[in-house]
Length: 284
Image (cartoon, rainbow, N blue to C red; front, side, top):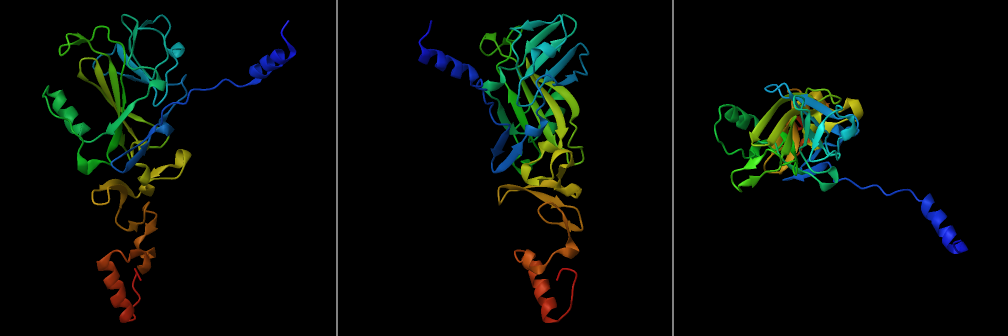
């Protein structure tokens, strides 16, 4: 029989909630431009699944910034190296194999700019080796989420003479005219042996500075413009359609006052001239 103090301590410990492991952030800032893929994260038991259009026996099941619960995958699969839950799997229906494409979510992931992804994929389709560097003028184009540390079985590495680990990158392009509740799937590409890229489109592939609203009503630049990058200010901003202005393109040009445009020398001069001649103009 335990002493009374020890018994009380044991009861208190049982009453404490179990600690949860905090996952790395799904938000990143690169060269002053912030992206947040958190809204694209799904429950671990309801992941994304896309099929390789060139290999109908292969599909990719993945989550964004979280694991996929391996128990929801098709029954009868042989998991390689094991059935641990990780953010992404490559599933081959013929031999019934499920390869891990990453280490567990708490191991983290990487971010990089989408840059010239489309140009690179066109070159790859012609089997041409190109250097796929991010275009510094297109830092608002989108973001890439990278997973590494997957299974190495059947992945030879000519450079090392050993085996290479599988890896997956999710290229999320800024798509102003897609619904905030949907993700458009485009293609799967094997960039090198056992390294894969899946190309997606979403409003959440756009910089945070260009997003407005919440939930299913999130829009890019109010639906009246596109997101661009100001190299001088090192910041993302909305390039508004004709007739609109403001940080989220939510103001018509006729509603803008002179004091709000003082930083624009040309417009300020026009307004000043109109005031001096006592003419009422649309901008003044």
